[in-house]
Image (cartoon, rainbow, N blue to C red; front, side, top):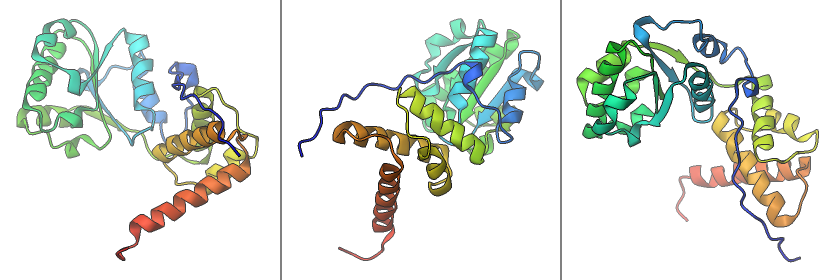
Length: 235
């Protein structure tokens, strides 16, 4: 059977407040982003595993506060005066742990934003005490911020995340697919993103519907590949 042509169309995530499902694992973070809440010292660190919804919540807060959003790796010293004129969210701060120039820029931005009376949000996967920023003054200021973490998903949240990931790709699995995935897949947001991407790719390339048999096959294949990677024996 010839393979069906597939087109790798980019997923367009929905990042509005109504698109974010509140669950026990993220309720505290959502509450901290309420426009009526004032962060102690004017700054907040939001942490959580990849795919947990940090970027989504950053965009929710930015839409409420008018904040700018920038990746830490894109930050340069010349940007600081303009960015410090309003609230700002800096994403993936641990990515600059060994980048002295970016850390210096963030250090000055941190001080200037707060001096101007604006709010500062910083994000990273781990808790801030594990960011290991080489600029000690910056690391100490990060650790002094209020910290809220997004936790691993429960069944209800994982199901909603899967549904959202499928919807972002404008694809609809059969009704029994998501319950099967929730019961059998690795319980992480990153795993959810991976399995949805894989199912979409297989469905497009083979012309198959997003069915439970496809989900069974994919998870079995992933488990087999993981077992090969963990096998200490040489080939």
